[in-house]
Image 1 (cartoon, rainbow, N blue to C red):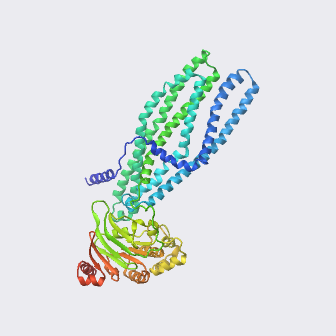
Image 2 (cartoon, one colour):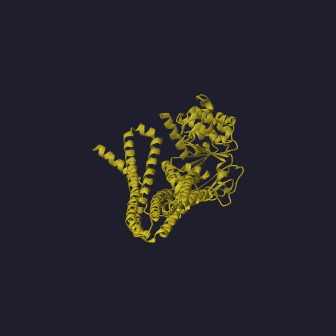
Image 3 (cartoon, rainbow, N blue to C red):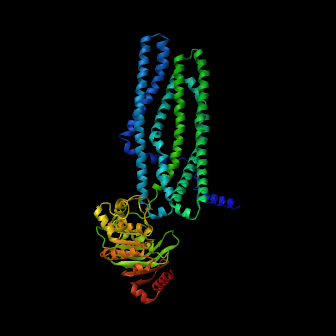
Length: 606
């Protein structure tokens, strides 16, 4: 019973997060938008690829005439040995030429496709980097990874060969039809009778194939999202002994991925055999009616042989066009998801003529600022306050009081719903975003360490800094001592999230990283929460020197870290309750006083 209940929960969890397949018709406008990525190559790789395709197609169209009409009907029938030898050399030469032309075609088409995929992936990644925090709040890392990797990879075949083959096959098909009619119109019409049946059946398959490939993309997104979460949260999974449930859930997602792929491949595979059957019917008509025409003298053996060659060429582009349409369907399913991201616009947008402040002094004003993350519940309720340049300003309050929201608005990760945030008297939305953020340093409680060396992680705050400057920043925050104890010191490799380091050590690196950037405004969001008392004393000592001439916004639950702040703002549910320095607020014996008293009681009990 318990096992059944667990399975049900796993299924509910899966179906709850399953995306919906959208039933839309093929969007040629969107496909045209996708093809715009070929524009940079219209003067080199694209025309070169077309040239090789045209030469290769022309050779293919010439050879059947040479074999049927000239070799069989003239050289052999008339016993012209000289003409026969000439034709053998010409046909052999054309095959050799076709071989080398095809080598160039494959090379240039692959290069073209890879360049387009590179450009598209670079464009998507660059665009995602510019999006606002809300975009990442609403999506898992795995689903974003799928768009940038899997969805773009699925377009590779389309750009590598599909686009050029599309035009080539239309050209080949049109040429073959003209030649077939010129050889024998009656025989051509007899074979063309089966085409309406083929188009009727193939049309009914297209919608099913498109929807199935869209399902594949959606389930792959789910699979990647779960993989990303499982790897990132493996410690939590093991701590709560949820490995079995996690494996069961993955099994469900993996099974769904397997089933959708199987159905997509099954539907996709129906098109090829269908064209083969149509080809067989056409060949049967050719043999029956063609033999009748030859025996009656209405056609020659050479024409019949040439016709057979061209008939094979006729079905070949039709079959490839069907496969190409399947590629287009796969491309459509992926491009819909790619353009969904590319059409996302940052909620925080650059002003049309942004003001660039070469050096921020650090004065900050909030004037009747309101903010809501979801449009309904307010995180800030029309608050107003000022922070002087060079002042250390602390934000205090329970979780959800609005402290981090204020920090986010100062860094302009979000824009105020109403009211104005000003830096040095200028509305923040008039300033250059890059120019603003380059002069703001942020240290978060949840420190992210990148894969690479300790040196590289600290230098992330200022890529142009020398090794000496990196080491100096580490010494100031007290990180130098533990770094030198590592196997390779500053050249020690740390994996993503810095798992070989303690939480406190990671925070010290983050502190050094922010200080190396030499910010005019420094935001410390619970930056000392996981640092031991000894490390905290070192940082507090360093701050007295480092914060001179800098505006500092400190967010802290540990109130002992903000005793020396010039000004303290006490918040509750987006409202300002009290403001003043530590001594003044303690003398009032209000909310701040109660918070400090409660925290000391907790420490005493601890």
